[in-house]
Length: 148
Image (cartoon, rainbow, N blue to C red; front, side, top):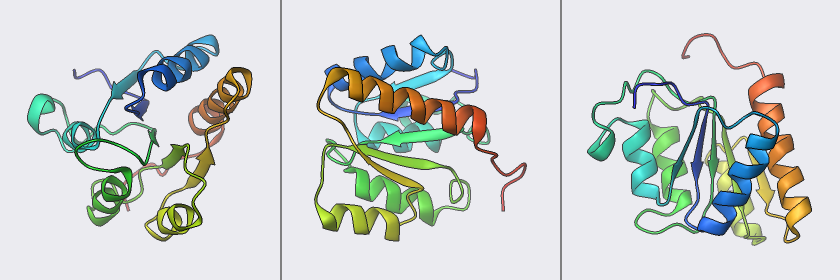
């Protein structure tokens, strides 16, 4: 598990995860993707704990695609913990969720989300949205060369 991942997909809905991974593969953006199905696993991955204790925590993904409605630790709490820690404070986090609730949008941005995207319901629209996300965050966006 020491191959650097470029995308951490945090999604408990296996159907949505499969669609996202398929869309990213179609654009050759899923070569270094890690999928976890709950918030605790996301935290463990990013901080090299639990099942990921052997992973180099200094090597972070280029982007986290984070659902909000997650088991164990919800997405809002994951976002809160990531922004509170110097190691992950500037890590790009895109909330990718089905929630259109204004309080979720506001809280996500207040906690430091870089983007908030509501999952499109139609397959084609969902695939296109995920594909465009991957292209932007992996190929267009310029991350900091060093941690702030």
